[in-house]
Image (cartoon, rainbow, N blue to C red; front, side, top):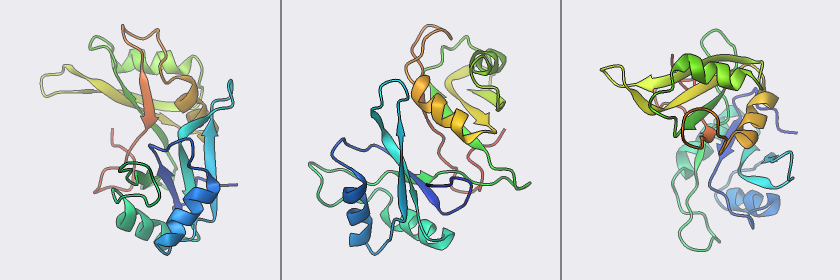
Length: 189
């Protein structure tokens, strides 16, 4: 089982249905990287795999090398031009606490950070923080972030809330939060 608390795990997204464990393991091996395990996220209601997974490597050095070497490179054996979409699964904050984060897009411009927090806390009790990103004038940019303390709740949110209605006028888009290039955390508040 892939333990996402460690620094040797990568998120891999934009996957196709034919990309199974054997395919991904062989693709990483072609570049000299040994994927120790692959954890797929599935919709708990339908059992259908999401279009992303978490890949575990032997250590953080191997994970970092795979990320730096392969990200945005063409994936061999794919139809069309499919590229590696890689990022850290989780990163520890300066205090050592692991954050489990999601990016929320398509937020109606009138939704506040407090409304975002309250909406998601109805179903996910481990949420520590929610933030709607604003421009210099304080107007919503239409996206935000949610920070979880519990990995399983974050994983459920990624599947259950993508396309959800009830917060503003549009269906929400939920994705794993991507790490800034200059930080060890997934996003700053």
